[in-house]
Image 1: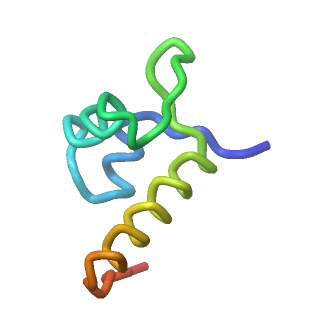
Image 2: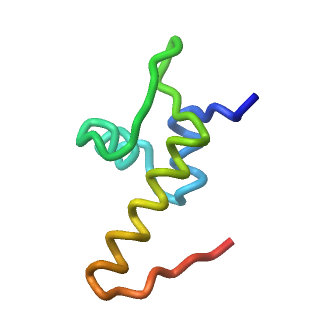
Length: 67
C-alpha cells in the first residue's frame, strides 16, 4: 500500500509551509483527496515534483535536487 501524506507532512517534505501546499492544490498543480482532511498520495507528490523539474528544465534552469 502506498503512503498517504497529510498537508503538514507534505509541507515538511517540501520544506515549505502549509499555505503553499494548499495553494498548489487550489491551482490544480498538486492532486489531493479528502479523507477526513486533505491528503496527498505518494504517487501524486512524485508527479508534482517531476512536473516542477520538467518546468525548470524547459526554462533552461538547472534543478537543484537535495536529498
